[in-house]
Length: 354
Image (cartoon, rainbow, N blue to C red; front, side, top):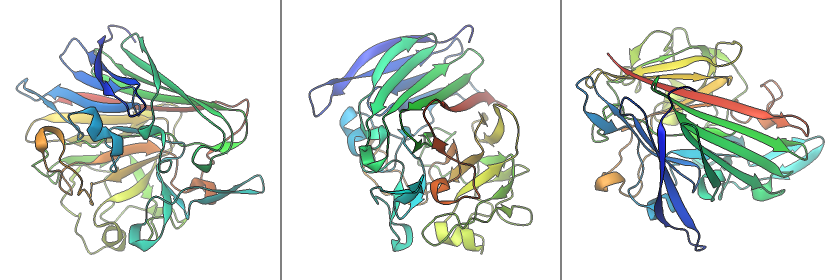
């Protein structure tokens, strides 16, 4: 990456075990400003200008380190080992069954969510400054949250002068395991979470989505979006059909589903969001097979930045990833990682204004 951002480090607070936590601030030539923390490999904030050049923070989160310790909504999180849901917290690999924490229960049906009780987003990482960004590493030991094998993980955040904010994850294992590391920021392109994201215009480069059970686990069907409220092949306002009389939307109280991205080699377009009021545009590119689009349907947590109350549908997530519950669905692309293989995931946020 040429002409990359400047990077500075500052103290953010002290962890319960007495270790220090630091913030790495990335600023590019156009004034885009990202703040990344070595606790949880979190994105704390992302500031970009609107069409008039006025900057605003586009992400949800907290002002101080203590707010991020619990973080039940996974604001700005790097989640793993397996992002999204695993049915009943169980899977079988090479004939052996594994039990994971069931830390989520949509519809009263327990499942494993985002790596478990103390997943990647709730643990400290080692960090070093790299050109234009920061590199974070940690070893997830054999048996952590029930997953097999020692997993060595590397996550990088970089900001370029092309106004691209790039998150990348890599992992190596010493025993067969399952991996689906996901970035989980909540976005409001207006920079004002008191304003719902219904007017944001969304396009998703996907012709199919994954219907789910009442427990929000994929049924195994890969269904066409055509003729349904799930069709974002052309830009549409997020709120236009969010309350439509359509079973998948009723189950999730809005959008909380995986879209199957059109196939292609390497990093390719996945989605585009535009806020008509501010003129901000965010494009998503990835090398993953799916993107989970979530409209923050159940936000009801502690006050956020500047004391803000984050309400349902005050932000959206576009989480590029493998298919949810892939360890239990033989018809889905595999998430098994074996010794000698390298897990890789690239997610690009490209910002502009119209």
